[in-house]
Length: 373
Ligand SMILES: *Cc1c(COP(=O)(O)O)cnc(C)c1O
Image: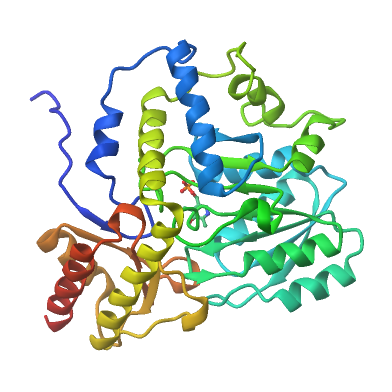
């Protein structure tokens, strides 16, 4: 029997990403593939750049999408900016902060870790204390929206503090972009990366990034070459911003970029602020419903991510069985706990296209039935 075509089931994705992809984005993906140096495609890439500038709220010239998932965006920021002479203060309050530390260590730079509590926002006072004690620090890195814990940190304040001590900021906005307020220019973020499959509700595999002029200057003036050829932004810059004469660096994921373009057009049509408000409104509905089912939130109310809800798994309830029930009976995916919360929490996502009334109702009804069994 030869292997047959793969026809995936239709699921509702309420985990930590990927989130539901709108039919508009899926049909954009199916449009004819054209050459990645075709003038029409280059025009579209320019539109992706300006749509991303809108989503990030930035005028940064160096704003584009890395042809790889969020983790590559993270790595691109670190390997291009940080050299072995640097000292990077990393605020860690979950799984993704640990990956930032790993990036710094692999570069051979010094990582000074500000340990935060899992399930809480990064403490600005702890950052300031670390900066006082580390005058040689050159960068501050932190995760805006920690997808492993559901905590939202005060990006604006953390950037202000970093600037006061002459440090550049590297911010993980993988889960925050499109879901909560994020203002790259107003808040003075120097390097930021995101992912296509969280609140942008595009297919996975692309990582929007943006560098401030200061950060772009550092990249241009490096003495040593970036150890990663593929992620070396001084080379990629010629491809994404070659001012009319783009040169080949790698083959852009043509159809995935159609999809990103469409998802960003949808965000623009909805309005960025409206998208933030929608995520918050759906979160309120979901939170009220979860609490009425007796489920307890992990993160204090004013530090919660609307797009990712962490609740403790009640005593005596079988984690895997509940998630299996939701998947097989309702085609509904919710996320398992990660890191310190593995086995003790569920992560219920309301990202992008998923953040709609019908999904909140479905999730609450299905969970109620699962818990009753
Ligand atoms: C998902 C996620 C990443 C990694 O993105 P991938 O697309 O899975 O590589 C990084 N940081 C945060 C906060 C995330 O939620």
